[in-house]
Length: 81
Image (cartoon, rainbow, N blue to C red):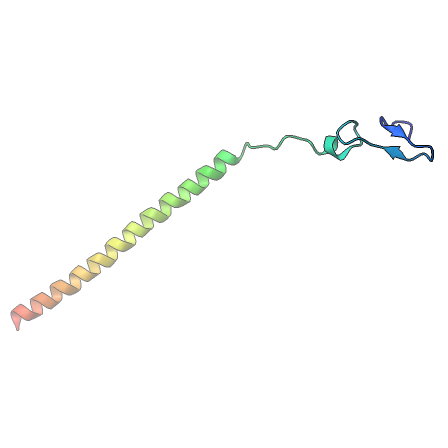
């Protein structure tokens, strides 16, 4: 315990004050959180949202077009019969 920066009790046990020395977990794990990829995450989520919106609008358009074709066929069969 020669390189310990805190105090030592009579029986030789080290006494650490959190954040006061290099052996303290508060100092060892106090690296700043990296937010460099947050922009990519938000950009990716936005991209997925736009793609799903476009696909949903296209699907609704196809569904409505199919309904119109069915209605047109019904009208033409009524007129011709």
